[in-house]
Image 1 (cartoon, rainbow, N blue to C red):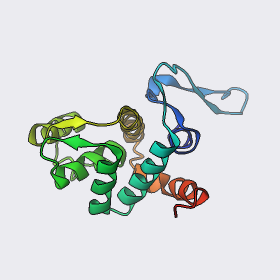
Image 2: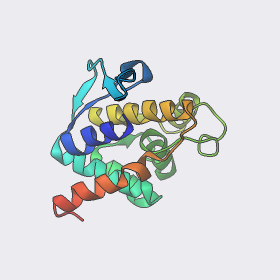
Image 3: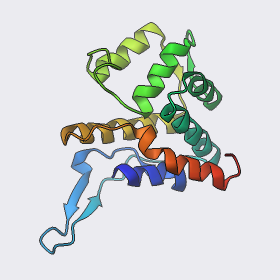
Length: 171
């Protein structure tokens, strides 16, 4: 599901924003041909080509740990907060689209940490599609944590993001 959502968001432009473990089934085990089965597409969202290309750039900037570029790209995408504090914008992007670990979250639960960021620099606007991409990223990382497979979404998705941008002549 981790790479399927990647394909859906960055390449197809239509993705399931509700990819929690209850909507992922393991099928075909008895027949010796295990496959993932995905159900409940009630949270399907579309993302325009322009939004996908911008998201690809955000993913690459996060994978590079490029704070300045990540913040700039989020602003270009339409992110607005009351203070527009670059450090808070970067942390928001890191947790929303890339990874969560004890150091990054300052020892807090992800929800408490996001509320902490919001309390310090309230978010006024995030394009809807990026909200759902964040939800998918967080849900998939939660599944990874449950099976002790924590990872950076940006690093895992980087090669596809680069491929998409190269195909468009943007890299």
